[in-house]
Image 1: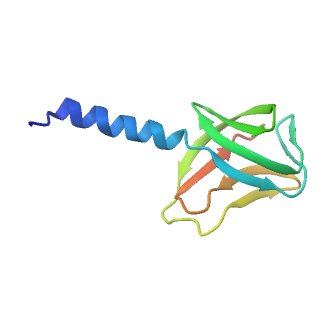
Image 2 (image 1 turned 60 degrees about the horizontal axis):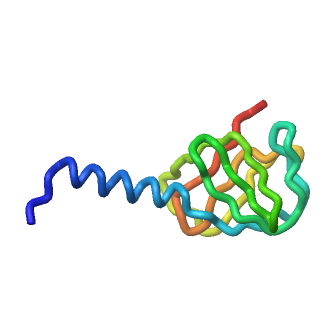
Length: 104
């Protein structure tokens, strides 16, 4: 079987898309705000969908503009980076991924 450059590109792109949509389980210990949205303390599944982070808790879904960034190293644990209760980013433990929220 011969692998063409186009097939290789499609396979690589599919893996990248699948990885970007991986949901992560996170626990928010204190209420945090992002722009005009408030995230209450609790357990969430968060995943990137295009240019937004989607937080799901039970039947409630919250979408917040964000970008998926990469670190030079793997994060040992999930860390919420905030300033004055305003969420700036989430470093996702066990990955090099970080969700970065736009300043508003």
